[in-house]
Length: 452
Image 1 (tube, helix red, strand yellow):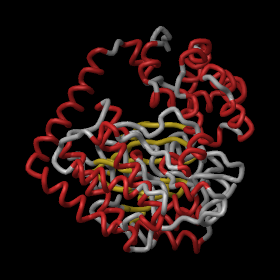
Image 2 (cartoon, helix red, strand yellow):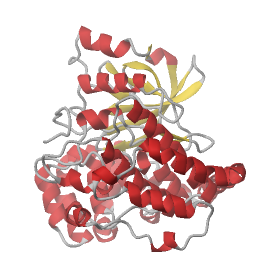
Image 3 (cartoon, one colour):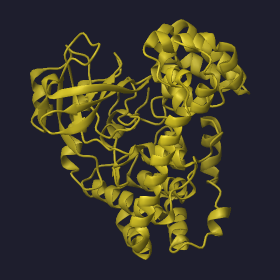
């Protein structure tokens, strides 16, 4: 596998957290050295199991298992991400701690401490990072909850806050390399903070030696600049600027760029000038929409030398936000009310059987759901590639290539079930279930006839 920077045999991501920006990344015990431990521990306060309570599972996938827990001394919630065996290496973890230590900024996720302990169901002591918890998820989850973009004043604030955060990273000679909606986390007031910036430059590439998208970084290739599709490319700061341009489009429209395009098509089209459609944006009459659209197009220019720096982006984003600043509190309140109303409606309308399907009580329950609904899943799962990417290393490279080569989602799903789910046992089927609830929750709810 090829990496843009330091080579690493496995992809590694920080932000596949359902509702969290406070993440603990854990590694297998027995691989760290005293010197490596000192590299990590001097950056932040250690946290052990004696300080954590109210553990709650909030996510699972090919990357591992994510929990939410309460830190009893600090009085705040944290999210704890346990990576699957074989996924993590210690030195990249130290690099991430070092980078976060350098990047202390209002709009960058803050490092709180280091984790040492045995998580629920674990059998050995593990090490990791503890970061602040972001109550409202990410821009990606916000788009899905709202079924579209947020109100315009919030769009403008998010655009400016991300630009400020990225400018700070670049001023510290750090690059992100994986800027996308899922890596822009939101606090209780919908303010943005950047996450997953350290390990993306150290151990995550968007391409590998087989010219396939890195399965551990779902959708990243859609935010890559045209020059990055060259095998010999080494990322520089203009990589992040291009990604910011695509991210702006996503924030403004509330959509995913190229939603049905596989990696091979994106790799072909982006270098020849294709970009997300802007017809609707051209017709917008919001305060500052013209300036934001112009900035967006400058950022995703096919020529890296023509893209602005984030320092040059700031006057534009600050001016656009200033035009809408008086309406920001009203907009945030309205969005939060909508989110709260949607959550309450879902809880009210969900039947006991649907609730049991949505949150099975064990890995066996999830695997049973997948097996019992095999025929329907093969027929109705539409987001096969997105789910496959989310499963990460649980899907072997050969199987991934076979899935990618199939013309229809039914054919793709049939290969995924036969080649990965069936052979992977309960663990992979449970990971598939969690990925399905993320990408197609309505399908899971519709299959509510299974009682556990």
